[in-house]
Structure formats: structure tokens, C-alpha cells
Amino acid sequence: MLKIVDLHAQVEGEDIEILKGINLEINKGEVHAIMGPNGSGKSTLAKVVAGHPAYEVTAGQIFFDGEDVLEMEPEERALAGLFLAFQYPVEVPGVSNAMLIRQSVNNIRKARGQEELDPLEFEDYIADKLKLVEMDNKFLDRSVNAGFSGGEKKRNEILQLAAMEPRLSLLDETDSGLDIDALRIVSEGINALRSQDNAFMVVTHYQRILNYIKPDFVHVLMGGRIVKSGGSELAHELENQGYDWLIKETHVNG
Ligand code: ADP
Ligand code: MG
Ligand code: MG
Image (cartoon, rainbow, N blue to C red):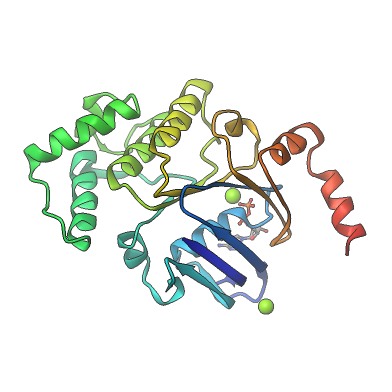
């Protein structure tokens, strides 16, 4: 589904390379966790895949279903089924959540050649999704993210995700600032949305969320490179031992 080949990227306009040759393949049905210390490039990787304008790709390729992602505008990537949940969700005062989500859903339905949902149809559609993420109907009438707690913003991201049914979700630091209940709800949401047809890339500094979401693969990013990949047991190893042993191992291996 997603294939990243020798990806190099830097901050737009600056000459400091952040991603230094990333190779990664995500197939449908898979959940991949990207872990690593602060500043290792995890958020940059997610943003580059989503097409964030602050970053410039200097070498390498990204394919989504065989299509050249780097040739696509961020909106085109979203319509093709890529979803990026940002680390710090923005507040959009004056735009109701329901309006935003219905518009996003309809944009995607249009791109897929499906009928758009009118307000009544959308009500039914979103009711199921609200149930899934254990959110109250009242959320829909509020301005986007305005006055939401950290946990509520995260739940709302999961609601958007549930509504938009992306094929590949990029979730960045979904566990930061989450109390244990919100973490459980977000994780259960992701688990409920997991299927043989979609995939998830979960970026996280902590192993905590991985107690609720069992990844098929774990990759450790350090200094802009994936220095180790493994199964879910690698996350537990990191929880117990931190990242220091990997820094040493990486140095030994050059
Ligand atoms: P992580 O998510 O693993 O903590 P990031 O991808 O956010 O790491 O950042 C990787 C490195 O790139 C850090 O050193 C960070 O300071 C730098 N960086 C990321 N984005 C920018 C930016 N827009 N401007 C300047 N430096 C940046
Ligand atoms: Mg280079
Ligand atoms: Mg980050």
C-alpha cells in the first residue's frame, strides 16, 4: 500500500537534512509503530508522507497504491485515502464539527464516485461513528476543537478518521497528553477501525499506547534513519531498556 524508498527530506529553505534515507513498506491490514527519541524525525516522516509544505524532499520516492505520492498535492493525497492526524490539532472557531466532517466525508465520496450525504443521511452515518469513539452528539455542534480538552481533541481526530474511512492513517503521538481513559478510547477506536483493507502508521515516543494497540511491526527511528525493525516485542524491549542500548548497538554496527 505504502512504499517509501531511500527518502531524504529537510526543512523547506534550510540545508539541514532531517530524514536521511528512510525505507519502509506498509501493506494493507498492517499496523506499524514508529518509535524513537525526541527529535529523531518521527513527526517529519508523517508530515512528509502527508505532504506538509514545511518540508522538502531532496531524494527518494513514496508510492501509495503504486502512485507517486510526491507528485500529488496534500488534498489529492487525502482524497486518495491518506489521513494525517496532527500532533497538535488546530482550533477552527465558527466552523462546526458536523460541517467540517460532513464536508470532508463528501469530498472523499465525490472522489470515489459515491453520492454525497445530505444532512439527514449524514446524521445516521455519523451516529454509528460517534458510538464507535464513545462521543456525545453534542460534539457535532461545537466549533471545531474549540474548548476541547486534549483528550477530547484526540477523540475528535478518531471520529474524523472513522468518518473519512482512510485507507492509510498516519497517527502522530496520539498518546501524548491523553489520560488513561482517552487513551483507551482512542486505542479502541483504532482497533475497531482496523481491517484487512486499511493500514495504520502510529508514531509514538512512548510504549504506553502499544499496550492497547498491538502493532504488527515496530520501527525505531534515530537521527533520521530507521535503525531497527521488529515485531511488537521490540516495543516492550524499548519500554524496559529505553533507547540507549540501541544508540550503542547502532554505533557498533556503524
Ligand atoms: P520527532 O517527532 O521524532 O520528535 P521531528 O520530526 O519533530 O522529531 O524533528 C526532527 C528534527 O528536525 C528536530 O531536530 C527538529 O528540531 C527538526 N525540525 C523539524 N521540523 C522543523 C522545522 N519546521 N523547522 C526547523 N527544524 C525542524
Ligand atoms: Mg541527501
Ligand atoms: Mg514528534
